[in-house]
Image (tube, rainbow, N blue to C red; front, side):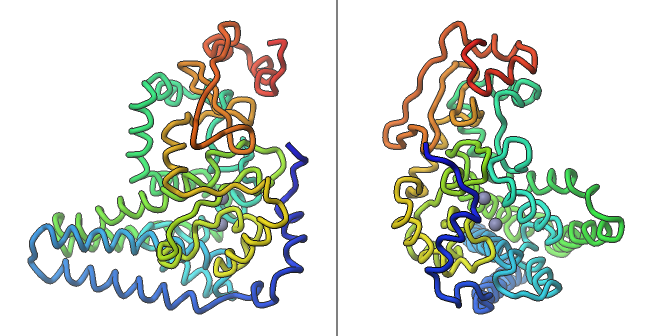
Length: 375
Ligand SMILES: [Zn+2]
Ligand SMILES: [Zn+2]
């Protein structure tokens, strides 16, 4: 593998080739947001005011769920400052777009912009990265999960995508709230509480059955859609010491109309190169990456990425491999031999068996992580 480079290194080489307008905010994206907002309001009114067949409610719930997810994608873009530049307006519009997912703009910017983007795929500092074998050995719950057979685990982890964004968001609130200054803390709390006051008021107004179709089921659908992308963003890539988006990120491909509905959220490597650029221009960035560094760039259809996720474990081993600790099966990551059309594994030798590795002291474990053959 060639030397890793930071996202700024790549951005500096592509930026001169892009038109000036690519670096300007694109407020026109808000029309899409307005369309979704109107669909959501119409959906709430239809469910709230009319007694319909449950199948019709189900249909509306699916439309609402896809709209919630799309609003989340737009919220992500807005809070990167690529739609409007004024901070108060950016946060207000971001709060509206993230309202269904109930993630506050201040928390999101801290967690996503200032931490995930800066420390992508860093084993300790990226709040969205998956555990290494070392971390696994210290967490009872994860160890228990990894004792389950692969099929059960894969099914459970795919099922959990329907709640994962909301759960992770709550976890991020707990992790970051103490890092805000006392003055900001109040607004971070308000940004968490207000959406939930709204959703529980809706429950009170509509009653539980209608609320299930208007909010709860759409929320699960939105979680699944959003996590369907997020889970493919970095999880087939290695942990990297340098934040190199071409090594640690994956762009998935979806039909053109899906890209239109989801504001080009599929272009994740491009997004990590230019997080402050409207996703409208990512297809152009992609063309340049593919001409300049074709061997380093990773892209695949989203369906294939999800199948690869199903077939591989989620614990990192020596940074650029994935391990199933129970079986001692070791899989490659993207750029390190992972072939998504033929996923294979190697078996750890008895001497390296995971039980033995996990029993070792931290200092010795560190050596295993770095691939020291003496252990
Ligand atoms: Zn990312
Ligand atoms: Zn981002």
